[in-house]
Image (cartoon, rainbow, N blue to C red; front, side, top):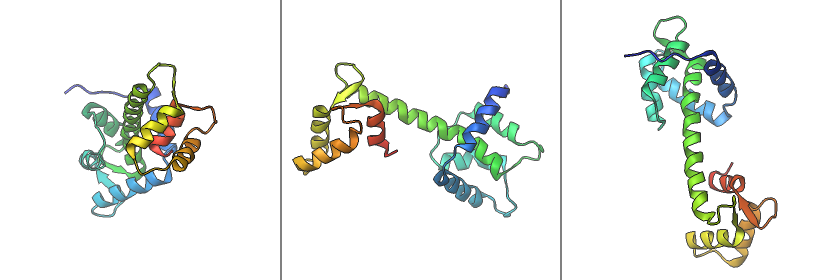
Length: 167
């Protein structure tokens, strides 16, 4: 099997991404790491990383994973500490985020019928009412004012993303 090497730009990007992990992600990764750190030595075997990432529901490219594992196993002992594990995991966490963003962009385009980069709040009102027919007019108004943060009467992709992801 051909080796997939990471260049210096790839390595720098991995370092920057690791620093951007939020507390919830670090906690999730720490728990997963601890479950597979059977000797509680603060290290896991490289072979277990794929299992952990799959358990977390992440999409994995085998060549990328092998390259990242090889890069992080600096002592060449087949084991990774928690920081090294995080640097590998963040690579695939980011790819999952990018995939979600692509899916949301496609959904946004369905509602942006004119293709002008926004959804009128009147269309958003119809969408929300169809999703939950128990919503009153006041509740719909309140939801729309929370979503249309700039009060433009339209929802752009950023506002749509916030609505769908809660971020």
